[in-house]
Amino acid sequence: MENIVAESLSPVEAHNTAQDSLHEHVKGIENDLQWIIRLLFILTAGMLALLVLVYEMRGTLQAIQASVAN
Image (cartoon, rainbow, N blue to C red):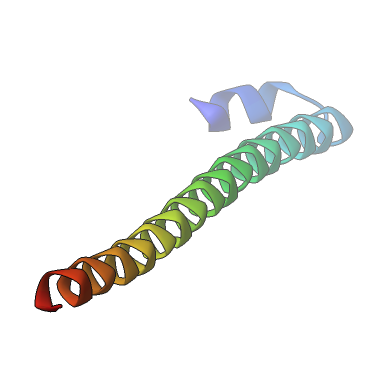
């Protein structure tokens, strides 16, 4: 179908149409990449928070064990 449309357009119009299509495709990819980067940032922050939580729990458990041992 694109060939039929391209044949009915002048070379300049066909080039502009293809260029516009490419720009739209690139914008879509950029948008997808921005969402992927946001999700990776959120996941990294969540993992860091989980790591801090586990570290704090470990310290609390060690304090409880020390108090029980005495």
